[in-house]
Image: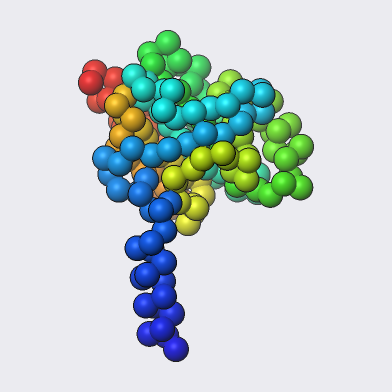
Length: 164
């Protein structure tokens, strides 16, 4: 039985088109409505460094990371950096999540509302993807209680991309 499950998992991973964004250098796709009423389209961000952050309302590390991302957004917004937060909670949580995003300067949306998404479902939260100015995936950063993301660690990923 264990072998069958492993084989099935292997084939699902091969045929799952969402896995494409996991390949470093891939050009991921994302179109998602934001709480501000506009669509965020990753392909429109060419020429900018983009941080795509997946989070949930119940995740304490997500809260901490959102504060760091807000600080980075406010500090770097004139330097061709864009951030999009994507909440993975369900439809019934939309109003609560939207209220949680009010103090954030960067746009946020709900994963279930995405019109196009080539990112895989997060296996841990929070998870952030760094996209370079050419639209290619450069890094995947997963925060954990043992290895939390800091402003400095995010800056170490984005600063080299600013000069490209």
